[in-house]
Length: 108
Image 1 (tube, helix red, strand yellow):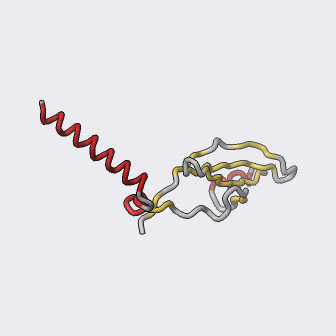
Image 2: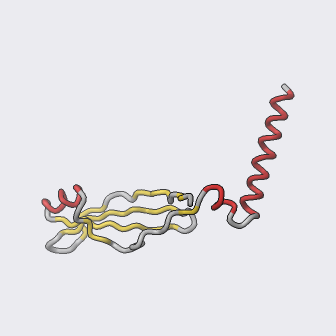
Image 3: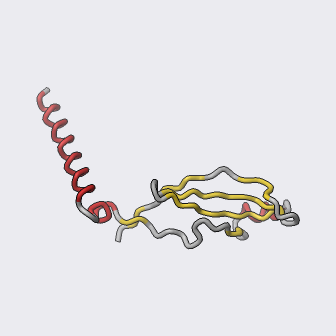
């Protein structure tokens, strides 16, 4: 029974050490876990999608598919948004639900 207690104390000590090192040493997180991938080129800009299957299907219905990616600096997550515009009137016909995409880490 005492063995479980010693392992528990060791686990807490290791977690506390890692927490302190990652918070206090600049670059420690990047060295261990990798750096975040670069941001996309057109962050926050609506871009017409013409090549995907969904865009081709929307074109048959008289709609133009547009996408954009928003970046939240606090959570380091991307929000992918999609909307469909009427080609003739240029009004928004419908909007898909937002998809939250986690930012990936890339090791050098």
